[in-house]
Length: 65
Image 1 (cartoon, helix red, strand yellow):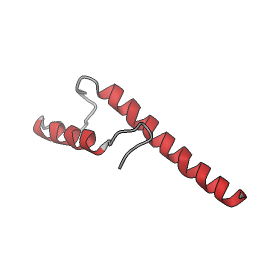
Image 2 (cartoon, rainbow, N blue to C red):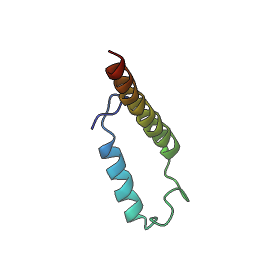
Image 3 (cartoon, rainbow, N blue to C red):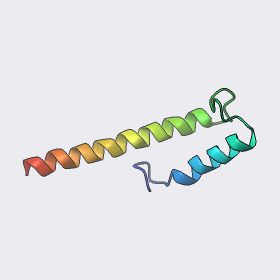
Image 4 (spheres, rainbow, N blue to C red):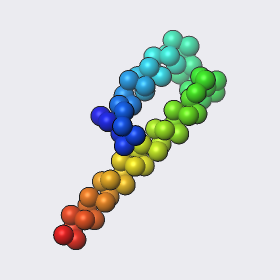
């Protein structure tokens, strides 16, 4: 699934899950975050918000037109 940022987030998320599983850091994944985790989370949040905005815009314009 491509997000509004123009790239697929699933491989990034899957790699994060595998990394945390290998580190046995599954209780709290943000206790010892990997380098760049904050940036990736910010991009994920922005992508999710943009995707939601697209859906809401489509619903609004779909109801008005």
